[in-house]
Length: 479
Image (cartoon, rainbow, N blue to C red; front, side, top):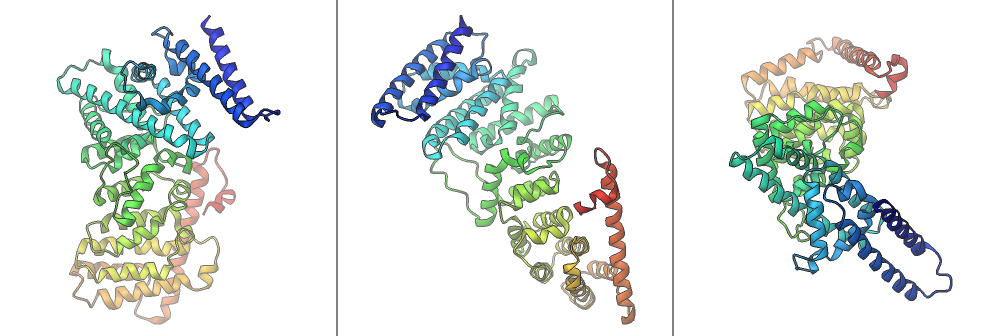
């Protein structure tokens, strides 16, 4: 009986959709609109009666998503009726209870919202999505408070409450945009730290949980440490699409670093997470270590002026310098010469920024961090697919400027410590500077050959580690 009723409801909805898209056939648009409204209202009423009367052991979302998904349109007016016994509130209470213990229900619920977001025009569907997001934030926050209370009172029993813990952790880590809600994020931090302290959180190895990377931006050192451990267990993100669930948060973080202000929260009725620069920089420093070059290029650099922001902070004498330098170094190591294609800054501007900052700070640690950038900076020219930059003398130009800085400025300036002067001398030897000018060109050639040899080894290694293995001649284009 239930199966036949379900098929009938699904067929009726499909016919209404087809009727809505079909030609008017002589019927006035106003008359057609009124007819479709009446048909939908009747369908929603029948749909509610069918779903709410399902046996309690039948979950609405994971069992009847094809009907529940269009029924979500009615939630547009959820807050218009404050009666706790209204049909929508009764329905929401039931599906909330089911999502609290069933990850499949959670998936179907969020997939339906994703469908609305992609298939309908934003001006028509945005009000509905805002209502659903608010309901989700209230639901999950309440569920976390309930579980945290049990944990604090030592009333948590894995045999009774294990499904709740799995479901709530699954939902937040799979849909990290939820962590933009301040109350939810605070409760989830307490939750995951307490669970990890008692049981040590681990994740399924055949699933990516993008929310793990959102933990890297948390204020709590403990939460960030959990995020790092879980991220290492999942491996690196290879494609830009892997970053899609994180994009709303990444956009917020980058806007904050760029403008020093948070995006407007006027459209949200619940408080948003307040950011601190140090936490965001630490988050990006950690996140870059888990990105493959394609994910970094297309998922971050293609969308945001990230490198420009990093370089601006490298030139500031602030506590953010260390993280900014680490981000720049990771960018060089990941992209090599392609870095220049992803920024409007010229190599000379970048070099001058790095060298200039050495005279704005007396901190030995800052000097060392910048010195460590010289090698990846020069490698970005050596690794060029095209020899255009080398033919233009760009590499030699940058190398000579760095050598001049090390030889004539670091060794003679009181701004640098004895250790950094000694470090500069080592760099001079490594970069092939000898007293006799006739040998400089020879050492420069040797320097080039050394890195060319290193790149050749990397190409061979990449070929052997590919699945299936690939001969070096076929994977050289990757460099």
